[in-house]
Image 1 (cartoon, rainbow, N blue to C red):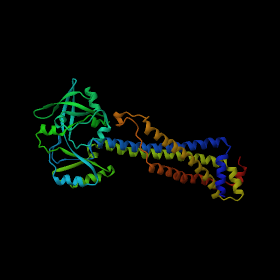
Image 2: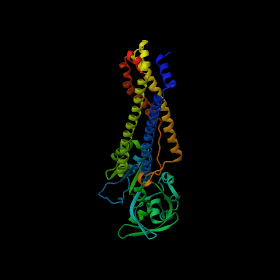
Image 3: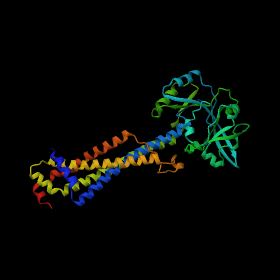
Image 4: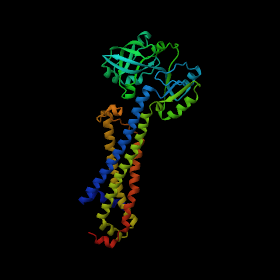
Amino acid sequence: MNTEYFIAGRIAIKSERTFSKLIVRIAIAGVMLSLAVMMLSVAIIKGFKTEIQEKVRGYIGDVRIFKFDLNNSFELSPFVPEPATIARLKSNPEIEYFQPYATKPAIISANDEVEGINFKGIDKTFNWDYIRKHLVSGTVINFADSAAATKQIMISQFTANRLKLKTGDNFIMHFVQDPPRRRPFKIVGIYDIGVEEIDKGFVLGDLNLIRRLNNWKPNEIGGIEIRVKDFSKLRTISTNIYTNLETRLKSESVQEYFPAIFTWLSLLDVNTKIILALMMVVGVINMITALLIMILERTNMIGMLKTFGMTDFSVMKIFLYNALYLVGIGVVLGNILGLGLAFLQTHTHIFKLDQASYYLSYVPIEVQFLDVLLLNICTIVICFVVLIIPSLLVSRISPLKAIRFK
């Protein structure tokens, strides 16, 4: 039988001292709350990054290819991609899909309101999966009838609210060129991405309309949007795409197109590290305090055990076993609390956010098994290593003085 473990169990379970019980409960609560907060912090930050990345890349794409020139306007210069370029994109295993597009600045006039906008032209190859997830009302553009498609348009909820429009309404759009051209449109769908830079800046329409307004050739486009399979490899994939492009073209990743958003997301990692460090310190301090109080309250017992011949190391092991037992309880309760709140938020979205400020209407949660496992292991290991220091106090206790200690 492990004598040290047996005595530690008796101290932990059978203790009748009310003061030490209170301190022990506080220590367990500290470990529980620290682990739960760390777990939720990591899950929330990862959820934020994933959700916002998906919002931006779902509408803009991961990599954009366009003509390499001195054009700095919203309206991209036309080009016809070489067959070799299209072949390389199709054969690239890192690319999920790609699609042509073009942009043209315009002004919407409706209900005595005027709004500047960037008309994004797309064609029948456009992947609607992302837009369908964010549809508020209506449907997507139907390219089956090419003549009708040029008069259909999709706008954001932000633009619809500003111009007091709804699905099925008609309005006039003035395209910025010399001379200005105006075209009537019917709203077939309203979407809500939740990112103001996108919702405020773009509407979706037919690419062929831009071709007609600009007198482009039937196969000319303004750019190519690319969706990659693994976003974590975006930098490498983007560099590879740029290297293999024809000389008249250039590419740009979504991180370069929206630097402010992705810089903000990278700063969230710093906040996570600070929170993890602070919560770990709180948990460790609670456990050190509890262990010191337990040692001081058991001074008489320590003296007796040393008198019976137990070594300092054996006595130290008793209190380390006891402390690890309490840490274990705190870890179990912390997992229940942290994972319970994560599960609740994932299925109810009970904790809300201001979408205008955070791009999301609720707190996102992304729990990964590896994160939970590492946090549990780190909490136990760090607490054990740190608790060795106060447990060394046992070696400084004299048996003779300890027996007299009341």
